[in-house]
Image (cartoon, rainbow, N blue to C red):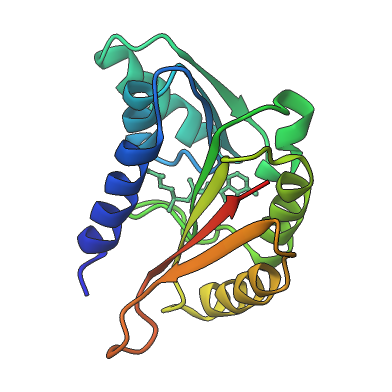
Amino acid sequence: MRVNQIRDFVISYLVNHLSKDDVVIDATIGNGHDTLLLSDLSKYVYGFDVQQQAIETTQELLNDHQVSNYKLIHDSHENILKYVKDFKAVIFNLGYLPNSNKEIKTNKDSTINALNSLVRVMKQDSFVIITCYPGHDEGFIESEAIMKFVSNLDNSFTTLKYTVLNKNKSPFVILIEKNR
Ligand SMILES: C[S@@+](CC[C@H](N)C(=O)[O-])C[C@H]1O[C@@H](n2cnc3c(N)ncnc32)[C@H](O)[C@@H]1O
């Protein structure tokens, strides 16, 4: 499974579910590719990352594309609700930045803390979309924790998994939709 196929799925979901009226959140901006896409598909994007380098790289990318409908925040996605409480969508692309410090990566505790706070305020028709990477040890632990978390959400949510059935530990996507 190429990671690109996973990304294609995420992109097509975003294209089909976002509009220029929506406020959205990129919970892991990294090099800013998702932030740039979201700025094109929505009214306003809040981007979060714990690495100053990610903020600077993304800022440069958005400047290059003359984008202005965004705010980049150097903080953990655990603290999203300190900055924004009303949103249509939150996108997580977990793990570490390719070609960067692999020690700085998302982890089970902060990701579950973030999801826990988000599901408390999600409004009808909002969604969270998470790309998980169970291929490395911590990513596996994080992915298992996310699967447990989303499996236990009540039926005001629909939770889905987009996965490869015939290859172990491939990246996969989790979707949390708020129904009512
Ligand atoms: C796989 S990269 C994201 C790639 C990015 N979406 C892109 O399009 O380039 C994961 C990012 O999550 C960030 N990260 C790790 N822990 C975080 C946390 N608790 N809050 C916010 N960002 C975090 C890392 O610094 C890293 O930049």
